[in-house]
Image (tube, rainbow, N blue to C red; front, side, top):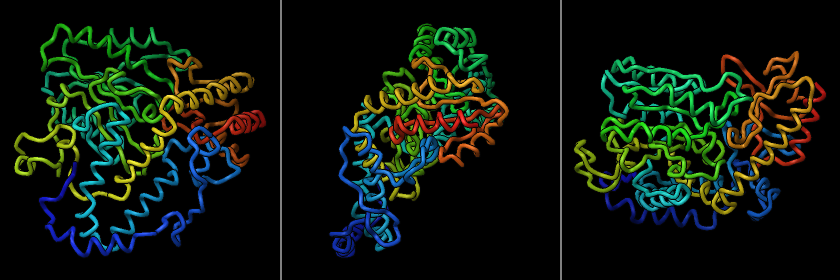
Length: 439
């Protein structure tokens, strides 16, 4: 993935790179001057306080916003700093000596976490970039239709609007629920099934809605799409494409288990990975419907990659080439390793338990209207509500004064939003509930 060995000479791995490695030997990035990182106790993945201690979050704050733009764990900070020092000391030498090995480590860690083949993964800088690449690159004719929802984020709506402007494809939206807190699996699937048409070629959905906290039953939607696809040819089958950013790193479910064709996610939210990283996962039989948008520097057959001729593994071939913030992308391996050490299922159970406790508590406060479903099959880690007499932003500001960090959803109808995670605790939940009661 992303190898530039065809562009760098063999000298890159020579004396200069060796000198950089020597300079790095014994370097402790967590105590490097100016980094602002204090000593971190060893990780005990079975201890939630130990997991929380790996992050340099301000103490004494109940932080329910870490999923928006993640804090880095100690191992990720150390990896970023190590690569930054190496690249600053000798960019050409460090890149040439380490790129292939580090790229392979990231690909291997991602493939292991997703229980998939490395060839099925493309890397991006964010969910928005991934959605833009996907909805630009999937082949459609002017007579084809894309079905999305009223509840999706701007990035999906805008990527599809731009595709509509360029190629004249039809984009339709369906509403899956009227009141989010009353959303149910049956109603969501029924509305989706009724909205599919003979022209539908893409279904573009979001796993967990950031504006309401509703989690879509993606597996059930996939089954409904598969029922329609049984009567279609390979080029006419509907592709189920999922913005998975608020489920990725939270739910202990693989893309294959979801049943989707493509899953797009940033890695700097619930995975708590390096900021500015993301990926696209695609089913092996679905990647052939995609044409890369940005030239790739993927390894393998350099001639085919550099001339644009077909060749190379589909995921790497879809990964945008060019130079990136490599110190962040290479530190993805440590983020995946942290989640693997804790256990994806334990992460999901912990997050759901804290979210359930928060929802139960909010539901008992008379002046609060809970807007996220309480049932686990249609909710995840995001918890949204309304507080009587307060706008979402006013409530957010008042809670901040009480050392509780929440957010306001960036939608036409804004809600007060909490994101309990593996970095929060039962005490944080109680602190948040007390602060809301005091409003």
